[in-house]
Amino acid sequence: MVTSAGCVVVKVFNGEPHVLMTHSAGNWQNKLFGIPKGHVEPGEDLKEAALRETKEETGITAEIIDYLGSVKKPGKTVHAYIALYKSGSLDGKKAIDYQREEIDVAKFYPVDQAVEMSYTYQRELLKKAKEYIESEMN
Image (cartoon, rainbow, N blue to C red):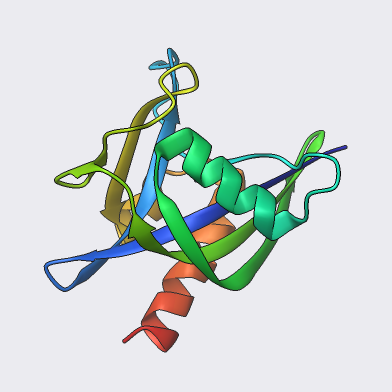
């Protein structure tokens, strides 16, 4: 079983929380988006992997504030953290320095929209992030 880790990165635009979502490069038949995530490397803990993968895939640096939990899909377990946007080049709500070989869109979306557009197996994590934002960040 492969272990992955990623971040639900939150940034507020005009008073409304948005989360960073990515779309896999070259796969426009699949309209679903996901959180930036990737494999945990040997000797790396889950938090380190989540932050590294977020930075590598999107160019966004984040600060983890809490663990959201994990979800499983066949052959993979994904661990997710809720994190705050710290830095990274943006053009409006789009990340500029994303990893184009893997990602063709990296953009912040309103939380409700992110839940609806996400991979089914990641929706639970995004719903938990929404609950966290509503209870802890307002």
